Length: 449
Image (cartoon, rainbow, N blue to C red; front, side, top):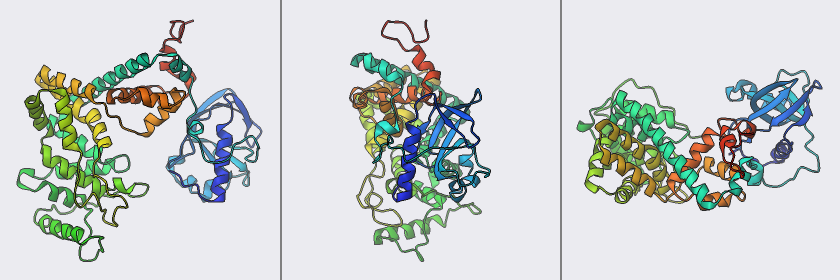
């Protein structure tokens, strides 16, 4: 999340609030006096990158979609390095309080008065970050059961689409390789996803049956510090590093480029070393042929609810060392290297649809039934930004969504609908095909006359 701690940052937030309070079809002027109609303000972005994503503006009858960047002064565009950062290449409007470089080569610039008394101060509320969309009125008129059924059905559709996705990959790469690769990728989270895929490629070059899984993972990660020159926060950690190095030197493959792990903006709980530790624990339980192993285990258990419980047991991982430390310091609060919430998402998004894909290849109807019944039996839900955004866009109050969508299948349905409606139309409700096709109170579809 962007840090807003000093007076300048607080003034910039005030200006952002001013932009976010512009009504639909509101008019502002750019520095050349051209009228800009704000069709959609965009979604407030509190992480890295432009301040508002996926906005739409109209200039002289032309609709332009892109991002909005907010600054106190035009010169901030250069002092903040945005002119050299490709992440800001889609900015279509630069909104400032003071145009101190009227001739500067920046995106189209408009001046907005940040001192207007109507702009509220203070900490951002969720409703300011994610204002309700038009569909909030429709959901408000629906019964609790209708809403629950709607999203569970959407969750089943997402499950089936993921099954098809895994099936295509398995036909090309094999069932075990496909599932293993996606387990690696899932451990990377957003910041280090590509790095974990690179770790998978390097890991796959070894004859794992003849090597220790942990030694190969830690060695190929190129993340181990030099035990002779590094100061580590625990004697046990120093002993682990020294022991792993002594085994890795014997089997290492030479001439590797360094994996450039990302640490900036990564919470201590999600540091690469903790994710590698979690992967070691998981593969130690389900082997490096996870599709084959879990298919056999599903046949042995032969009960969806019990198999689901087994998967949680496999994925939730603790470690006496990595629950407490990262390489640089001791954790302020010890926590499992992979907890229940992350396990829930991996089960619903990766393991169960992958096993369902395996059932298509082997024509094993019992496995398919097991995968689906396990999916529908999961009453746990994850908490992520997509769900939070959706609840504030769709429900009044947002807590209604959290109360009603109390299963993993429903949560997956929310993600499915959000990505195929809000994100697909760039949060412009007028362009949303989901909104147009939802039943209105009179029984007609929104797209009907």
